[in-house]
Image 1 (spheres, helix red, strand yellow):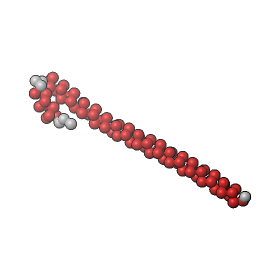
Image 2 (spheres, one colour):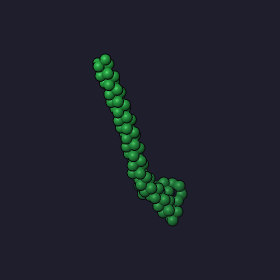
Image 3 (cartoon, helix red, strand yellow):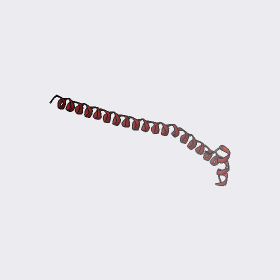
Image 4 (tube, helix red, strand yellow):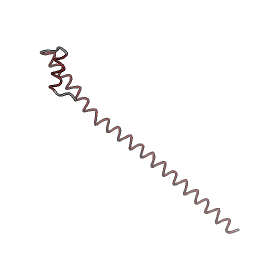
Length: 85
């Protein structure tokens, strides 16, 4: 993050004066503004990806639980049938 004074100093070190220096400072401020605007968007994308990962994990666990429940029910049926015989 560059403050105006840092941009002025850097611009002067690069040999800019007058309108060229003002434009250099303005461009630097615009770049900083754009960078700050991108941060929330990147965070939103990270959060969305995490939500999707959690949803996929939840669905996987639900499927595993359903399969296990069906396996137990089948086993119970087999035991009931063998007990009748």
